[in-house]
Image (cartoon, rainbow, N blue to C red; front, side, top):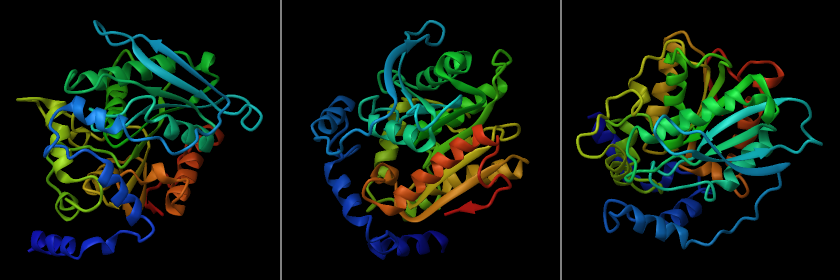
Length: 343
């Protein structure tokens, strides 16, 4: 009966989506490739998205630097883009955020996520290291995880050069990037060679955390809210490949041991197939004695944070993200450290 109720909720249509968000969800859906349907080739999907004209003017930050950092053993260097905050507004050592972009491990790159990186840098005053990890299907799991972790290790070893506070190293990501950020948190905990600095925070923005794809939100939000369950099935197929181990905790961080992980700040959208796994990760951390805050936006859809320039709800979420990241420097604590929900 629960499944039937979920399907009836979906039949109610877009009523659960904030009316202010509906035009943007529909516009994004119209521009996005029909992944797993008419579009099954990764290069074709990338070409379709590359043809979409940019509409926003890049926000100004203190400085931007493209560079390469050492990759995993036997792999090529990892390109990163480092964003420095405005030194007149943000003085002294600052938090350092290693950011993994979304795109289902297949789409997205430094350029397509430039606006998001700039917005996070401005909101938090952090030095932001955006990671151009290898993408699937050309490089399947665990290539992206290893690249992201290599970038995290590099950032932690170069905080003096970056101007970062050694007590305020953060790993962050949205969607598939949230998956990589959570996997990096597990690697940093389990790697005897990791050492210092300890991670102060993991920031997971509507993260993709479970290859099982079997939750109530996958059914109730399967269609009609931009990102679909069919898109996600295609992304997982590209990432894992035939016979890939979706149960590996580095592929499905929700399946990992939550004990001893750094504090988390988890953003979820109510009209998103991924909602339930983000909430489940938050509650697993709390149940293991960890710290986590959940910022829930019931009327929003997957990807809404990128619309901070036009959606008040997204603007508020971005401001809170900035405050939480900044707090790792100012007092070493996360917002909502005892748990509970924000928003």
